[in-house]
Length: 116
Image (tube, rainbow, N blue to C red; front, side, top):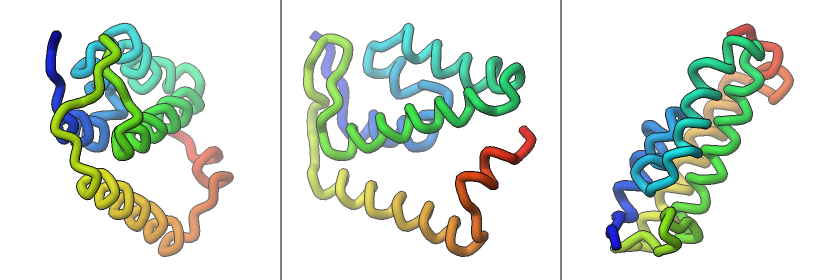
């Protein structure tokens, strides 16, 4: 049984999640490859639509890791869970995203219409 650390998964999800690295770390190799392909290959073919899908997918993963509802491929919970770190990370990321949206006046329609 491999022990995978909570903080490591959280940081990988935030900084490299768009490449699926957190999925590789937690043993979900096939899903990691899928996210990687969606980000790097299919986003060119689909004019960025698959990139939005993979970013949504990774956002859900990040939230589930923050609140410790994410399990590794073997069904084990991540070790060394710290509720304060998860809540703090979620709050900081939410504030960063909200501030960026409000500051730039972006809407989801602006993001979808952006050419990648």
